[in-house]
Image (cartoon, rainbow, N blue to C red; front, side, top):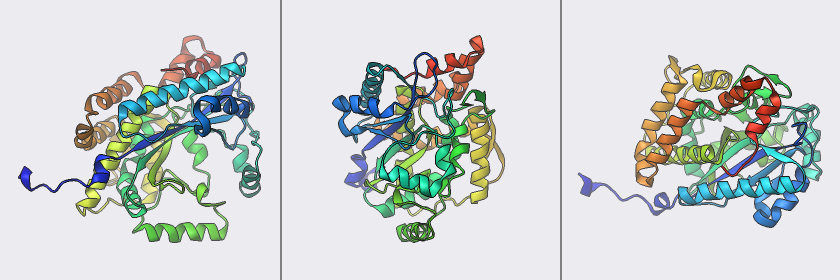
Length: 374
């Protein structure tokens, strides 16, 4: 009976979330990537402060929101953040493009930004850094403790290929169509600690494995744990980091709301003592590749049963799965419209290819991806 339902803990009702995005700096005439991120970030700092930052590669710029309780405030922060970054780029005579991989330009070896940590990364990872030209979207969701973050991560694992298919926005790489919807995931998968995380029995299990990876030299530090879900090394959050940067601010907000709802449902399952599914890592990797190759248009696989399952169908299953949490937050209409928009109008990858088909020009793909207040 309703009167017998235990109240949710306070942390549940105040669950904050935030977004980090990376963008390519491009020349407005050639549309090729250019190593001007440091200048853009310095100028953007007047509006965003430390929420604007450089990245490993000198033609990547990053921006992040503050933590928000409310989706409406997060949406406004994403729009304002993008507008500030776009204005800073324009003032420096360049533009920013929201695409997961560089459409045009000489990108191998990538120009590495200045700094001791980046130099150390190059010494450790070598040729991997040379090809680290990718832009992603990370969503942080507040957690009460690291144990909860690890247990939630276990419950998220079966849904990761579906989220990857929904957010595919990187079909082109340096002048060619890769044949994939999300080439960024393919480039990322070569790193020693990346992709779908393992199943962890506890936070101690997680720490033990990370300690072993540090000890053997597979990690530079805990910041280079690049699994697509992880307890943040710096913040009291679980970090979901598998998505391409979104084409628009609205797409980014839909993804963030969908992720927070999935985290909420997963946390409820932890509270209820429900065991997390544990699909084989090989099955997850295969599902990742199918999602990266074909996006929502593809025929994927149910990682828990091994049966074929289309990603459009999986997207509907995901929406149904998180509907109670969306309802609690008053976000059903916004997220449902956003997912339906993706199903009807296509992912970022499909929109990029549509831009190319109109005139057969990759410059048009870059123009369609330019950062705007939208």
